[in-house]
Image (cartoon, rainbow, N blue to C red; front, side, top):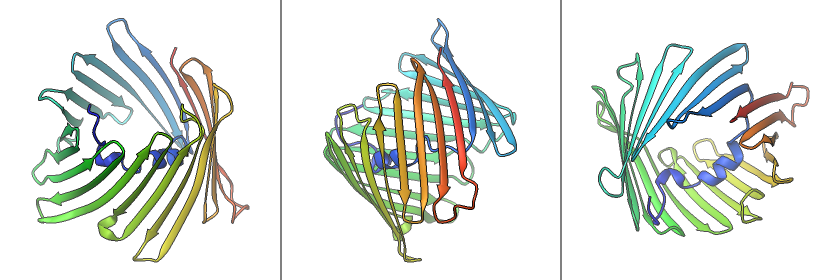
Length: 276
């Protein structure tokens, strides 16, 4: 919405997505369509272990408003309303799930050329209030977030972070878990489309003196095929193969196994997303 720094949730997001997105261990099938009136409908079926679930999601856009409604097989109805620029440079997001009447949540985001600010609160009798802010530029940004429990009067979380962004790279450091952990990451893109990339991330938890180092990357075999891999110092190796069967329809095959326990059965995931 602006040319300033992103939200606090954007700090470290590129590395996180590269190391976690599409690494699935279940079976998923989805079909998306769009009507002439602008209503988008997505039907999804998921099988994880011996359990199966499904949902139907609809989205309708009208001027500066977006309405999302999802019905799932557990008889839940989730609704999200997003309004942009009700007040200049703001976005308001309201969500709730039925029949859970205490699941309501309201979030307001404000964007400025030199900073962003968000506040979110649960709509119930004992709400938790989350606040985050960033200052800086698109190149470098400093941010912090905190969660406050109104019932106990205590902070449930507080986190701080910094990110440095360049056209072909991104670095970030996040101090989280109330100061108990620190995570540093670096992403480098080898092409302008940012399909071929390398990533490294190190996390240290001070209370347990545990370090986790993960390296990974993605490689565009051609315009239709993408390969991703990752490996950490605990021996966890993951791989993803994505292929665009037809325009906007993607097949994803994922696997993960423990190189230090090869006798264990590897985990596999399969997803097919069709957009006729």
